[in-house]
Length: 131
Image (cartoon, rainbow, N blue to C red; front, side, top):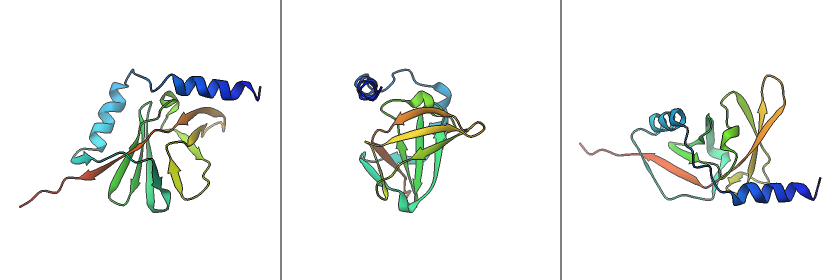
C-alpha cells in the first residue's frame, strides 16, 4: 500500500484541475470578491496574519490576511471542499504553500472526507476609488 499511495497521488496531480465548475460556488466566490481586483499569484501565504478562512463548496478556499483575500483553487480535490467540514493543515513553519495538502474531516463524525491539493494563492485587494 505504501508503494501504491505515491502512484495514486501522482495520478491525481497529473490529471490537473477539474474543468467542471460549480455554478453556485462560482457565484458565491464572485459575491465574496465584489469590489476587489486580482493580483499576481503567489506560492505561499503567511498564516501568522490570517484572521479567517472560508470554504466555498467544491470551488475554493478563501484566506483573509489583513485586508487582502487570498483565493486558492485546488489543483486537485476541490470536490472534497465542504463548508461543514474542518480543514486540517500540517504546517512545517508559519506559511501555507501551493505544495501543501489539506485534509478534510467531517465535523459531525470525525471521519476523513478527502484531501485537497492546494494551488497558487491569488490575492484580491479592494479597488481604491478617487473622489
